[in-house]
Image (cartoon, rainbow, N blue to C red):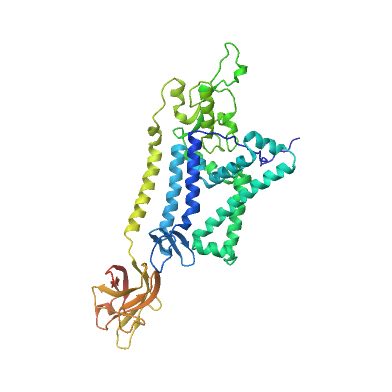
Length: 472
């Protein structure tokens, strides 16, 4: 009696080298994405004497996120949330339009796996040589090649983990501290964890991450339909498949000669001719391999291609397929694009209407008001003032209301101005008073607006609140 298992042991995959338009596109995307990742922390951006000069910085200590000229404060986290929502919708949009193009071209697992396979091919040889080495006994040559390959993998993995921590503090300073062994232990721990995961995921797990660990293959079906353009095999043209040597006089022969080129180049080890599969990341390397074979045997390219399955009946009948833009511009993709664009426009609008002067007002509710000896009524407010500029500024506070009210600042010696350092938030206690005979002192609630003005730039901001009288 055979015992079944829920997890199939990993079958080693040794993709063969292939060249073509899609492989070249993947090389360009790899170079650009890795270049952005490794170089970005070292780009400088002058924000003034009191602010960091790193272009992209997640400043956890001061609770700031800097992206070139944009500075995100903790209370503005909705910008980050909006970008994450846009990223999710973008993934839905591209998957609905062209399948798993994210997985095949720009997913970090794909990019680093491609890089590790490139190193492996450079050291151990192409597919056949790697298969022979894999099956060979552990002699001096095998140990030498494997240790050399693992050493380069480890260098790449350390650079990957090191580049990540540079996004969270000043990169040149942190690099010096790392080399002097004086950096915070958290930096070394983070680098060690990311080094281990990059080394294991990119070097050994590879396609297993895409098949078992990544949730997207199990979700993608909800995003796709027969009009989605994805990598597929034109079965109606390729079947019946036979090797050239197997073709006999008068036997029916499809364009596919069963050369296995599409299988040998697949980084996840599947046969695209078996139809749509969860494991397929639509990297299109099988298209390059098949097109190369078709040219050699004098057959038209496109036996394996980016196609929509809804075009199958027309192509079987010898008719041209639907135009690509008609597959892409359909209700689902238009809906995703509209939502994606609306969120983007909203974030841009919120970004450009921001001011460098901000305040929040929190009335002190215990007690709701203070009755003074002369009958006047006082309310107390905690006002949080933010100076989002790179220079020290003087803020002036005032109020407007339909009733007569007086404003005083704690510790200001009768003045209504307060000094706020650059890029700082302070908490200022504010007292608002109504005289005994004024209407605001006797009615339950009076509307008022607190204003703050930057004396240097005349930039203003305000918040509405209420004044509580004796009639509660």
